[in-house]
Image 1: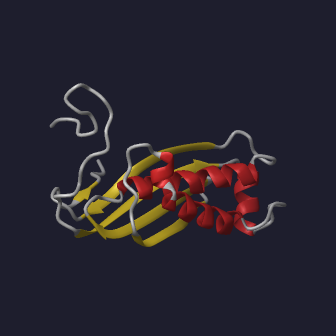
Image 2: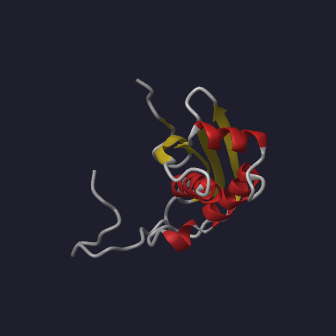
Image 3: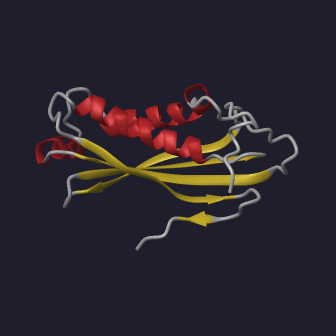
Length: 159
């Protein structure tokens, strides 16, 4: 497989998707932030001084996904038909998982939008909680699933 974001001279370029077929495309990305027990409890209880951490992070993730083409230089501007950001609280590991689902009908996929949504949501949690816990760790950001387009369905393998 060759890299499509470079021309014959090795210069970066935006891929021409003009000849591609429009299909319904969906991508789901996931990532985690690990918090101290004290910080996790405050987020769970809704007692952080800055307010509703997960509510703000949800809106930030959606806004971030919508701005993907402004942040990632070679991404196409997409007309998104659906964006969701949801959270799963894992008390045993003091972990919050963010899951972003992005959808469009178009000529290119929405993987970058889903990944950006997760990243911005997790960074927002960090920002809102850093006064209580500077040791938080963000990680495990990945594409879980994508559908549509010529390459069809991709689902991350769990070994």
